Length: 527
Ligand code: GLC
Image 1 (spheres, rainbow, N blue to C red):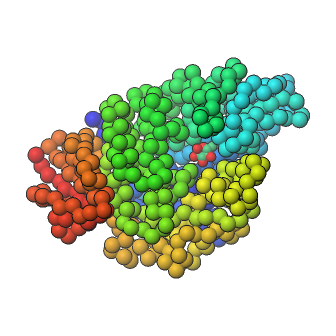
Image 2 (cartoon, rainbow, N blue to C red; image 1 turned 90 degrees about the vertical axis):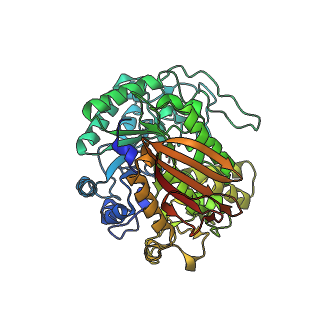
């Protein structure tokens, strides 16, 4: 097994506006993140994933890029990014950046030129049709085709109408994006997270309607995973690796279905894709988690490494999803153990390590996320009451997990000063980094210990599973690498579980052989 730096790392997603404000304007920035690198080093993570930081009108919080070569003024300057990057590298932390190849902002000069006239040189950078060729719906809801008054044609947008899909059947788009990637590799970054990479529109003939499922929801059959997309990805991967061999390439293939995910990762392809099978679990179910872990293990070949995550900026926080009433019962500790002992590349989301909770929005005017806002409008149009529409839009809205990192009690609760939100948690008992640092038994300190154990134990980084078993809601498995074995037991049941112990303990949340609900133990042994 070839050693790779990213297989030995725990990654930490930083949602740019919410991690740390360094200049007092209420919005996170590079200065702020740089000031917290020591905290991240101490936590033990070795890789940071930054959400988009490029200039953007932020219709979709930066996933609508208007300049691929610069930094949004909210987040700082190229020099500040460089300073942050150098500091991270000096601390042994690598940085992967989010890149959106599928679409640009409608404010991008390419699109402005494209829509200026039918004969414009960049007309074919985007997908224009003189009539709507299909029934495709945008992923945020509503039609995926938008009429342009000026040139009297329709353009395609898989997401918001301000996120215009590029035409990947045009070789000039490939060349333009290759230049962008080269620029950031030369800048010194260590990897890319390719946004919605399986959505690239590579087919010109779009005269095919998507089907609907029994509940009337559109099935996105023809607007993603099109024939030809894999060829483009393979070419991109090769071109990138020719510039920098050990770069880490992560694909966001928005799916939980292994058949859809598998073709995108492995030899000569992306290193990993995000496995949404764990992240998208709404209600906790150890049976479901177990089934997914088994599946990842069986379906992937030995060059295909799973990713493990329960949280990101696109979903509600798992601590809230798994404890809807907000009274934490310890499950978050068991989840941390699972994240950091199973096979794959673990990705954490900022705030997960202190148990930050979701927010609820009580006023539609204060909602920020395009997905939630669109949902609200669609529900009102269907005749739902404002209250019902707000409730449903809260479900869709991703703002809930995007509130500022709770460093200490001084931090404002809301998403930003202008957009106050309400936290489910009792304000007085708010978890903060300051509090968690002082408490030996805090989730934060548990994460630190678990990350250290993972990174220092080859069997946890590279070992295969043996005896992956779920019995009476107690999950147990062995990870084996050469002659070292690590045994993990996590008690997800409501009852005590007593185990036989004859090995060397790495970490045990119980002081005896008996694991109470959500306790776990990790043992190491030499065969
Ligand atoms: C990805 C991002 C998400 C964004 C979408 C469109 O799924 O994670 O936040 O809205 O792409 O770019």
